[in-house]
Length: 191
Image (cartoon, rainbow, N blue to C red; front, side, top):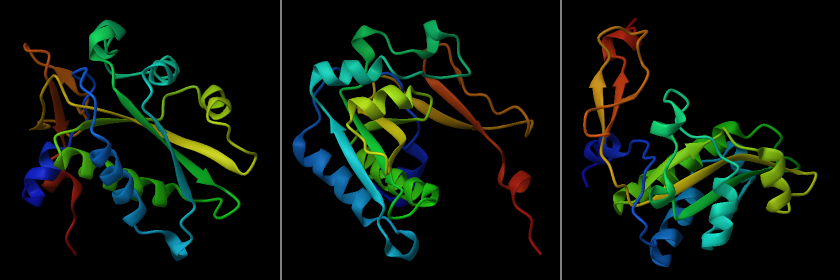
């Protein structure tokens, strides 16, 4: 894909086909994360890959989806759940403040996935205590987010926010996501 097409299409996807993601694509996603810039090149992030169906279900039960929508519309149903999660772990002994590193790595991961037609949903709304125990994290490790992956079963598009304060995403008549984005002139000042 061309870069701007890739950036426009890489939206949040919350309903997935029940189709396995090939190991070579998972490797690309992880390699893309590894390539992300890192403050002082400390590289304080590590990753837990959850692809076993039973473990994916355990992680799924610890997540909350689509906060702007009622659960019956936002929560993936049984045949719509992700097939893969990747947990982003901060190794605080290497760098206690690595949110920017995590954001860059997650951006790379989700773009690499979308380049291969794999959608994603970045999830911070999760039971981090339970997941940290599940992943065997140490006292020097902190769960940043889990990212859900799968081949989307719906579309997600961008619309211009007519009012800069009305930015809640919604489902259209086809149950496809529409994400209002503030217009460039609403967010940019030139000096």
